[in-house]
Amino acid sequence: MIETVRQLLSEFKPAAWEKDLLSSGFVKKIELVDRKLHIHIQLPFAGSSWGEEIQTLLDERIRQVADISRIDWQTDIMVESIARQNTVPPIPGVRNLIAISSGKGGVGKSTTAVNLALALHQEGARVGLLDADIYGPSIPLLLGKPNAHPEIIDEKYMRPVKAHSVVCNSIGFLVPEHEAAVWRGPMASKALSQILYDTRWGELDYLIADLPPGTGDIQLTIAQQVPTTAAVVITTPQDLALIDARKGISMFEKVNIPVLGVIENMSYHICSKCGHKEMIFGEGGGIKMAQQQGVQLLGQVPLHIHIREQSDDGVPIVVAEPHSKLAVNYQKIARKIAASLYFSGKTEPSTIFAVNR
Image (cartoon, rainbow, N blue to C red; front, side, top):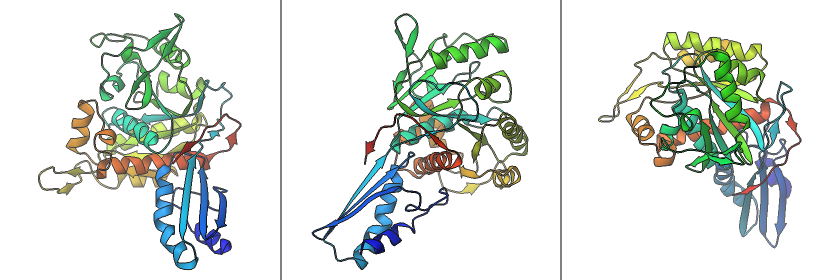
């Protein structure tokens, strides 16, 4: 009977996974005692919802073929560190740093970065947000902390601001809102490095870095002087945005940072009155570009007034309406990013922790 259960578990393979549940080594124990079946699953990436999906899909099927009185499912999240391409020393406590990038401004990169960070936390990970947009920081506003300041430790280090269960730091916490950071590239890069390395992030599975748009000094700093694990590129279906997104992918390829995929933001508009779906920025551009660049399309996010309203209120949609279609979409994309990151490279030794679900 145990072999039958193993066979059923081996059939679970989401599109984002390179191997099935069993051959990936994620099934740690299958035990039958007094007609009670215990199944222990351990995932090395954020994805507690995978555990719920596994249980939903397989629970009934197992009961149909096995003479059991109860199934006890246990899913642990134990996020592993993925080896980086560069030799920059790791940030203490941070296992994986994912850069969120866009070729041009105005495509919703920061809003996407914030919702993805919060979704990763909901999927069982400890998450931090680095606002790497020195010239136009928006993370403080998006997280509802425009007047917050990091706590200073020993007159040298900073304790990040906490919002909605994630920690974050930004130049926006350090410079008055009405003042502009009028700095040349080297100064901006130095400021970013100080915020990154002088912040005591604590134990994080993922540090999400919200990069400024383009392919300038800050992007090169993140690529060459920061232990970046991988990148995600945000675009819209509009031709102009797609051209710049291709440049962003090309930049990461040149510095040997894996691009996990593309997210097509503002993919379509949903009317809040009638629910009509309209492709106001074009259609199919993100899919076509992903295919041409040899990366995956991680997901499509609609242009919806609720996303904008909740962002302006400092309570992102993933937190404000966690069970809504909009939030679930971000959660699905976050799971794909976490799984794709794990399967994209080799794990490296690291202190890891468990989150029981």
